[in-house]
Image 1 (cartoon, helix red, strand yellow):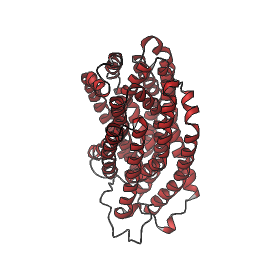
Image 2 (tube, rainbow, N blue to C red; image 1 turned 90 degrees about the horizontal axis):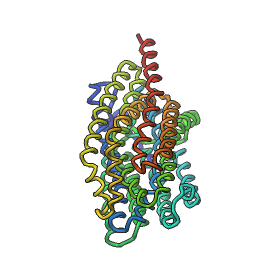
Image 3 (tube, helix red, strand yellow; image 1 turned 90 degrees about the vertical axis):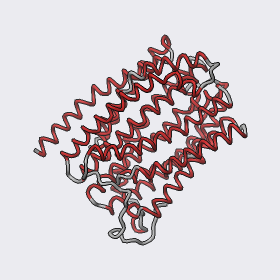
Image 4 (cartoon, one colour; image 1 turned 180 degrees about the vertical axis):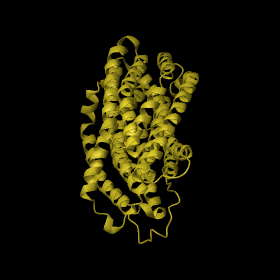
Length: 460
């Protein structure tokens, strides 16, 4: 995979790598975050295009089947990325400390362990698709279609891991642009294949799943090939390929906690999807659309959080604690500005957003969605703050706090979804989300502020 020929690491400069322990802090954060924002927006295009093409060319039953599978597919992606985030933080520390050999050893360890896990997840997913969807109370008229879609998606899990592991290795050394290039290619290919398979060849919802898997596969292969040929810093030599036991345990600890934390959100969404499913097919189709918008709105907040994490980890590895906290402060300011801006955009464009996904004849679906987005536009500042705080905890390698905070948030969110949706419908989900974010901030912010005060006292 990332095995390279002989090279002299001292003579080869990796121009894409960015040392965040030096330079203007806002410029470093924004320069790192912008390609990540674009990367994740293109990644979200996979699912959005599936929904748009399926909704337009097949019908609302197929749209409901694809939508009800979304929490499961998100669980897979976020669980895998959680493991890669944990490994990426460790690699960032090694890079900040200038220890390139340990950096590559950590990458090799993560690659081997993660590949085994990805294959296991693929097998389990193929076997458990139907029972899992039944637990989500998926209606019988869309169960078989949703299960078929989900099984195909599970085939793409190994490719999803390989891409994410390579991408987070690049991000750990400050290169957020290269993963963007391959995601742009993959997203454009996904759009072309979706239109070809579903719109032209009339392959239905299952064809859109194959389009996604093919795109994921090519994205992984191209990203690995690029690193192998162009980024010697991350090329694993034959003598470095053997996994290191101590690093494996550390990676499983940090990555495992982060994967669990990442997985809590889609697990909660699965429970929320169960509550929405009981409201009927119109509500399911509506929730599919507004869920896509939430993903688009919140994903940049998560990527700014990733910039905060990488910045803090590199500077912590270099022993520059004052600069580390200055970066966290500036990162939170960027989060706040974005949260307010995306709320304004959503408020103005909410009606047009619904018409992008749903035919004008589906008046009930559109009405519920417009109301939901109107309320949610007022709440997007909350996840901007929670994501920034989570990025701070990851930068400190306090992974357990990210897990605790997410458990608090999702528990209150699910609880209030079941309380509010029977009377309010889909808009009740927006209020439940705001309540969950508020409780999360109330617990996490005082703890992070104390950690900041304690470290400043030590270094004073």
